[in-house]
Image (cartoon, rainbow, N blue to C red; front, side, top):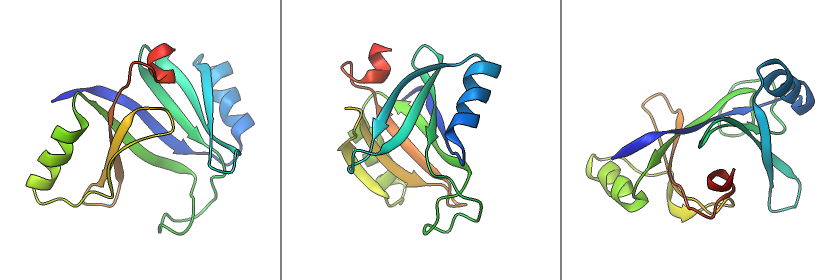
Length: 136
């Protein structure tokens, strides 16, 4: 049912410092950026290996994640799947409520979301061949 980990994501306080660390120090490649609905910078994608990425989200803040603040650090785990509807149905069959039902994301990939028992966000993603990740 799973194909691998698609990406890990972090909210960052200072994007330039983060890019310097991940790209200049660790050697990952900046691939592309996505903008939000207001056409503002939102996410920077760094390529780790083929079809494996780190997402850096702008505007992280110090504090505790209580769904009303954006914090620095962990944002979510993404697991790549073959069929977004299959995994959504599987999760529901196990009694879980999806935070986000299957939908197409800004990057053309299908996604749905759930939380683990500690409230950590997990994204399930069906990669589209026309997405920027697949073309990187």
